[in-house]
Image 1 (cartoon, rainbow, N blue to C red):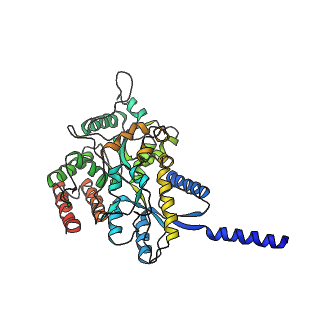
Image 2 (image 1 turned 90 degrees about the horizontal axis):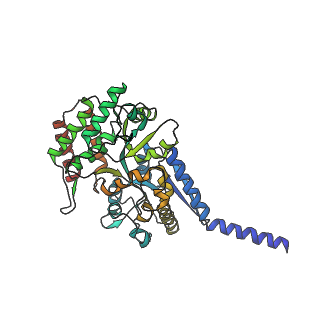
Image 3 (image 1 turned 45 degrees about the vertical axis):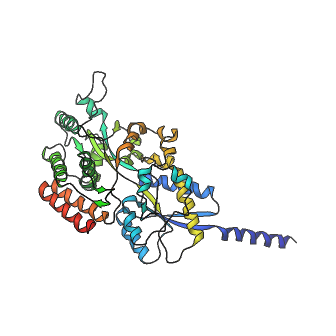
Length: 408
């Protein structure tokens, strides 16, 4: 009898093990961000014993090449991180599973509408965003006080316009004998993110929602490149890569720093760095438009659908989005209204100092081919900064490239 009971229990446990659905998830996060994602995945697994999420971290520089290869080979992960801007490219190739019948209406109604709208392609939902990450302005309080950039109360002066920022940065650089007045990397940060910010503040558009056509204003493109070039010809900024820019700011060698909110996972932990964060300056008369990207979850399409895995994957990505207040410790802004306005988010260090950036976010247009355009913008921006291309030449290059890739 005891032997029969043991056998029965073993069979029962075996059936439970068989009932568990295992899903693979590809992520590209490292450092503090990576730790938070892994922690959330572990929490999900603990709360959902019928599902096991197995994370695989893929190096960021190789992530999309590997994902494209895996999809083509018919062996992609069950869930993958994907930047929102790339959803149209993958969805148009049939590489993603539509999520409409797997995601609850309740969570869709809670989204910031402008973000959720870009998760659709051809009328179908292909991604579930879980953050938005704008660029912001960081400032070193210690250096600015030493440079005399304080008001009558001794509070650090925060630039509201670009002219004020350049003036403050120049004063701090010269008075303190610093290498730069503003630090930032010349690739994506200048070529795409700052370009998009300044171009939009000038009144430029990338995409006309009414006519459903991509558009660039050559005059405003040229003015944007002229502005970016002036940051370097003035001596306020110097060409540098991302690690160098980070090192300067983290080691109190740069009074101002342009970067994304994602470094808020790190900066508060650094001993000796007395910093603040605020939105980027604005062109007088304009609104404080700011570039922002978004991370999403997608379910890559496989040769044969597995309903159990798709259901488990959908449950995971919806759970993650609802628990975005924890993910927001990485610095990102939540995209669910209930989380964005929660004390769990607003109570995090300095979040109230830049949460209002969410009011004027500008994300990349929801069009096929944007990845190629974005990479071209990095290349052109760098050429302008290094003096290898004039703003006029850069404008012609970008406008012509867009016509070939997006408009045709």
